[in-house]
Length: 473
Length: 138
Image (cartoon, rainbow over all chains, first blue to last red; front, side):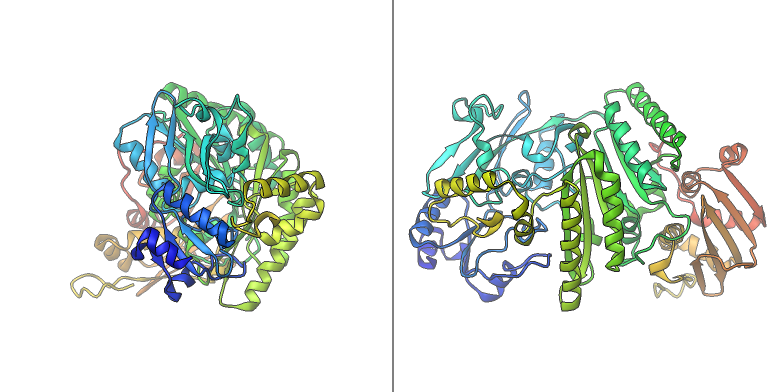
């Protein structure tokens, strides 16, 4: 396979140096590493098709990746397999302003797409994840990640209006309206075959292009922080604000996040006396100052109503004011963010149990996971975000750890298992689920769905070369 | 923390008491001081200041002690001697340190001050950053 790749791509685009391969063998999580035999940089769809055909013939596993920052071990390859590095396929192929859709390649990063839109001076934007600027837009969408536009528009997989993908036999297909129309405006009205690739963690094919929805950019944008002193108040405010339909984003970070941003990498797990429990952040946009004022008025009335029920908040703080007072917090003011306290923690370990779940149960679930984290001597760093108009909610428990310390690795393994069990029992479902989590959830997943997943995998990837082992496939 | 320039006043080291257990207001104040003391004027002012200021934001407290060569930040000990104190909600205190004069907050009772007003004015001169033109508040 190495000779084939060198012949096809040129020696410069094929890496076999053990030190380089080692860099592709691991990620920030507690997942076990595995070393590929080769890393191949591709730039065209034709190259990918040829490599897939050859890998299928030789039954060599293929793992596609860009930044490898999924925090789930999802791009850790199979031992001896091939890593297909798609980072050089980084063209924004087209943007149709009137259709609000971009066609992008896998290597287009959050920063790259933002810059591209800015260069064209388009009144459009997209949603940013909390991942660093160099991460792939396409990968986050395929994995159903969340962004700062997820309250309005759902997880990012919902924004895919069509795909181009290479199947296990090397053939190419397009999904959605794109299968007939030259404008990939919607996934419907044909059968929604985009779903054969979105949410599959790269196990059914390699997505080579994505039609991706953009959203209007309004001239006035503001972000406010609401410091809240109790969990019921946090989620009551979140629910009420969702129903007011005035926010672009409503998220929350628990108290350890602020301390970590302010230079304490591992705060004491217990909340100190008098401290706020959660920081809700609200993103508001408007066409006019009057519209913004009206939205702010609704925010204040909503918070007063929640306070009337016994919760306590600080008056809203505009993030610009906060950043002006404390420039160290500027990482929180603009997307894409580089949250170095998470992406470069001491000990280099970052892991999470990230789940989507019912809004009706989130307060109790948050309370339960917080208690588990404290029991594991871990600062209860929780991220929450209202999704899709408030129809569901994110509950993500984040832990940093020392990857070089086996005891610390065991601590986070045990912690994550306990957290997953707790939230699964409460009806939450892990997204971007790592291999260990899938196996832990599998006995409780509907057997009919699992069987169909297996059958579809065989149909799309008969040689079982695409990212083997993920999702139990 | 010293920048090694002999012509500039010696930068007082900012020491945070027990970082893992430090409360949020202590960390915010430490971050502000680290930022402001990067500027020579603020360094000169801080080096000359002596005394202890209690800062109380909502239910959180922190004490800033200005001593020769160092500034300590941490939760106040019981019965600690205080030169001056400021109390208010987080938002008002942040606006104050962001450079807005606290007259409106004082009149509205959102901020209260006790003790040596000169000490507080000097501290404010250190902590203040001038607001940018487009900064607003609600």
